Image (cartoon, one colour):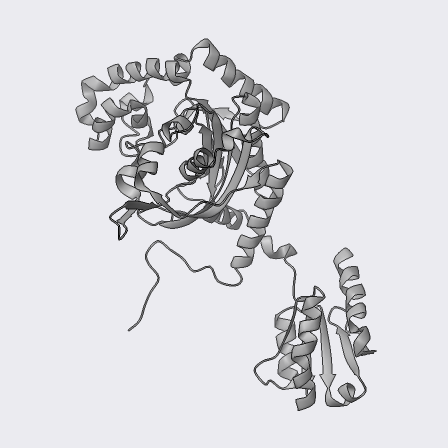
Length: 429
C-alpha cells in the first residue's frame, strides 16, 4: 500500500526549510524591534468562534472551513485565520487588564481552508500576523502597516504597492449600507446566488465578489468614502498623514473592502506590482476591527492587525530573484577519518565541537577518504579535520582550510581554539 500527501498540502524539504527559518527569524526580529510579543494559540477552536468572529456571510465560514465533531459531539474547526483565536485568548486571559497597553502580539503558524489549490494558495498554509489591541490611535494603524511593509523590504522585495481605504465607523457603514441596498436591489437577480444572499446580510461583501466583479453596477457602486462622517474622515486623514511622515507611499482604493466581516475604519492590502506573479498579486491584508472583542464576549476594545502568507511571500521572492540562501551559513566543520581507531574517535570529537557552537558532521557511510572529501565539498564545509590512526596516536589532527587550501597539524586539545579563530575571521570578511 502506498500513500501520497493530501491535496493542497506540501512537504517542505531540506534546502527549502532553511528559507522558512530565515523568514521566521526575520519576523521574530522585526516584531522584537516593534515591541510585539509572540502568542501561540491552538490549531483548532470551537466552530462558533469563527462564525461569530469572522462572520457567517464570509466565504471562509460558508465554504472553506475544516469542521469536525470530536468524540464528545462538540463542533470544532481547524483555524482558517489567526485573528479570531488571538482575540479569543485576549478575552479569556483578560489581557485587557494588563498594565502595558495596547497589547501588541504576533503569531506564525498553519491555517486551513478548503478551497481549490493553486499557485500561492494551499489548503494548509502558514501565516505570519500581528494584532494590536486596546488603542484607537490612528498612529497604531500606521505602525502596523509600517511593520508589514518593512518585513517585505528587509527580505529584499521591491515593486510593492500599498492600497488603503476606510470602511468607516458604525454610523458611516450604516449610511453606506443603505446606499448599497438601494443601488443593487433593483437588479440583484442579475448577480450570483452569494451576492443575492449578501444583499440583506452584508451588502458591502457584494463589492468583494469575484464572479460579478465586471458587472456595470460594480463600477458605479456608491463609494464608502462619500459616506464617512466627520470623525471617520478625520481618522482616515490622520492615518494618511502618519504614513506620509514615515515616507511610505500608498494609493487609496474605495473598492477595497477585505473578505472578513469584522473590519471597520482602516483597511489595507500590500500588493506586488510586476510580471511573473500570476493572478494573485495580494501579499498581505489587514485592517481595524473595533467591535470584534465585544462580539467574542470581551469589553469594548479597539484593535488592528494584518496577516500574510509565507507561501505567497516565497513565490514573490522567487519571481524577483531574491536568494535567501545567499547568506545562509554553510557547515563549519567536516571530520574525515581514516582507520578504525580514528573513526571511533569521531563521535566524541563531533560532540565536543557541537557543544562549542560549531556546526559539524562526519561520514556515517564508511566512505574512503576521497569520498569523504567530496562529501565535505558538497556540504560546503569551511574546514575539514582529517584524522588518521597515526595522528591519533600522537594526539594530533590535520586542519584544512577549504577556502584557501592551507593545512596544518594541530594538537587535538587546541583544535577548537584554532577553528574558533578561523571561523570568526571568515565570518568577518
